[in-house]
Amino acid sequence: MNGLNPTKMVSRNLIDYLWRGAFLALFVCLSSCDGDLFGSNSKEIAQGYRLKRIGNPSRFALLAPYDPGGLIIDEIGWRKPFILFRASGSEYWDRVDTDHASHVRISEAQRTSNPDYRSIRIESAEIAWDNLKRNKRMW
Image (cartoon, rainbow, N blue to C red; front, side, top):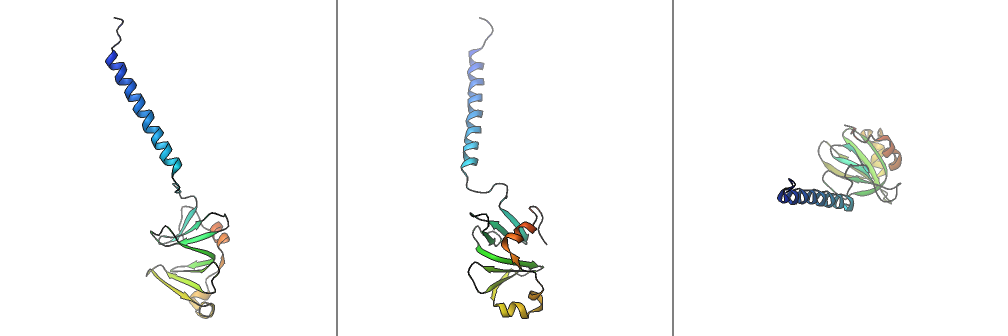
């Protein structure tokens, strides 16, 4: 014979096919996922609360820690430990205390009369998105 071992050739071909199959399966799985693998459409504000761009580039949702859903919001502001936001179409504000993981709804009058809330700069969700850093939370 010419020094070729048919068993080694079959073994090498089998390994090549397995690697190609594994790579193809991984590629199909990753490309068919609907998730955002690298977090490009979500930025953390603080303590796991995130602002997420959804569907339409100018629509945003506020997500609580470990919550895949969230509330679509129009306006938002923050200063440790509070996040204030107004859900889309709502006349009320929501206040999150990130130190105590509490969430309450407040009126515009309550927001403007409370010195802790009144001093928080409120801006559109889109401007807030632009002000957040991708890999750096606010606190």
